[in-house]
Amino acid sequence: MSKVCVFFAEGYEEIEALTVVDLLRRSGIDTAMVSVTGDKAVTSSHGVAVVMDSLFAETDFSETEMLVLPGGMPGTKNLEACGPLMALVDDFYREGKYVAAICAAPSILGHRGMLKGKRACSFPEFESHLEGAEVTRNCVEIADKVITARGMGCAIDFGLALVAVFRGGGAADALAEKIVYRK
Image (cartoon, rainbow, N blue to C red; front, side, top):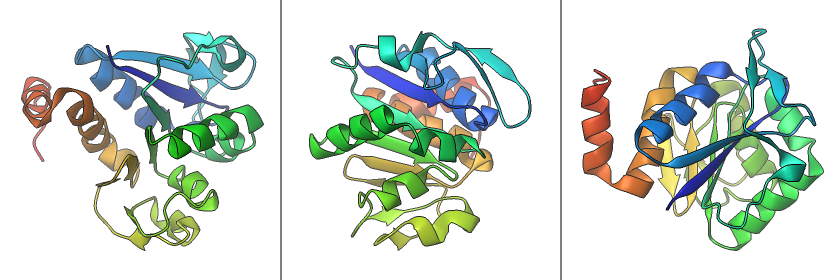
């Protein structure tokens, strides 16, 4: 069974994070909301507190197939400041596992050299941080096992792209229809 971990730091963008969690879970994909703060309740950039499934230090990542980094400020900076998470992201990238990021969070992948020679996108103000990437204005870019998306307005497209990775394009299209989403 597929397993995805979505990481939450103080100041995350709630639509980007929770839309992904919702769509993956609707598709039957085991999805864990993981706090990097040391507290299970994590507050978004707009003051919405959400209780996570687990704390980073207590989570077993051995069965995880994809890591997802939501954007938001200062959430993105707080994710990047979490050394154990960055070590895990580096390990996943090196091992050829999926790493996905949306909005400002693709900047983290750029800073880590993971976007060199790849098509990638991010929130416009963070495009300069996509070091070595061919920057596009598409909602979502999939380059090998690195998936990036532009921002909150692309959260459904991003979530559906992640569903397609695990369940196929037909399942993603069926889910889009079920939630009355049209591209």
